[in-house]
Image 1: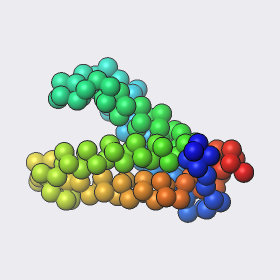
Image 2: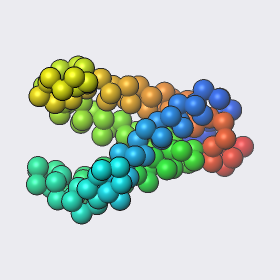
Image 3: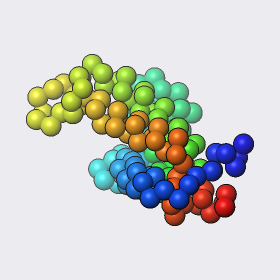
Image 4: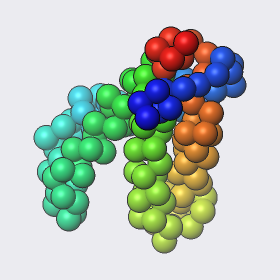
Length: 144
């Protein structure tokens, strides 16, 4: 089963979407874990999530997935697992942003952000779950 989780082809397309996903998600994780890019860091993020009713374990998983999981996706190690975790996070985020409509709040005229970004990330994750990490990945090296 572990080999199936890691199995991938030599696809440059999977490599491109894997790296793109990681480079987009990693700053979000760095905000939550390290307080970089205007984020609040681990303790404040945990406090925020738990104060809004999110169980501490799930809050920890979100921070772990967006930070460490993004690094592992970048390296192409256990990509399907981390893409699955990000899919769950984005499905929850989609439901949280649904009241704000579809579009992102580019003009600052909505009450909050829409869910279009989340749908894009879900699509990318599903492609990685189906295809795997692709070229230049640890997964590929381990299963050759």
